[in-house]
Every structure is written in C-alpha cells, then in structure tokens.
Length: 110
Image (cartoon, rainbow, N blue to C red):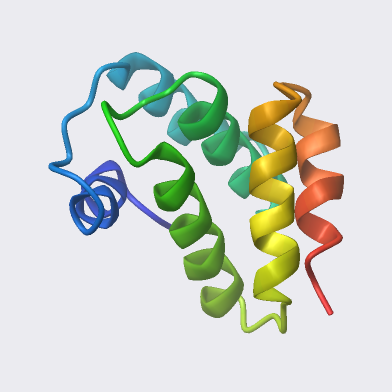
C-alpha cells in the first residue's frame, strides 16, 4: 500500500513536495483501509490529490503518477492516454464521487 511519504516523494518529481492540505491526504489514506477493492482505494487518494488540492503544485501530475504506480503494483495493463483523460475529466468536471472516480479509473484498464 502506498504511504503519505511515497506520495510526497512522487510530488517532488514534479514540484517541491509542499503539502497544503495534509488532512485530506491523511483522511484518504485512512479510508483505504475500509475496502479491499484496490481501485476504490486509489479513488480515495486521487480525489484527495485532485479535488482537495493536497499539494501546492503538481497535483494532476502527481495523481497520474500515483495511478501508474497502482496499476503497475497490481500488474494491470492500462492505457496511459486514458489515464490522462480520466485525470483531466476528474479535475475539470470537479468529480468528487468515489464511485464516479472509480469508474473513470477502471475505464483506463485494458
């Protein structure tokens, strides 16, 4: 399972890892223990990063990298262009429903 520290390290690849909404990320990570569905776990984290703007900068890039991390961790074939499309839609349509985010992420699976 991904940790807060690992997510911060991912953000540091794009910016400086400066958190502005740490409570949202902590809530998302604690929510991952409520389900065995790894896509739902991922959805909590992605909502936190994209909708609650966890980081000062690089939220979309960090979210995409976290998605890639999960897909590779669970050895799932995915379409990176569909991941980018899902990240953009979640962000620009301000999608905050975990189930809706889950469906968007599942659409990126081949």
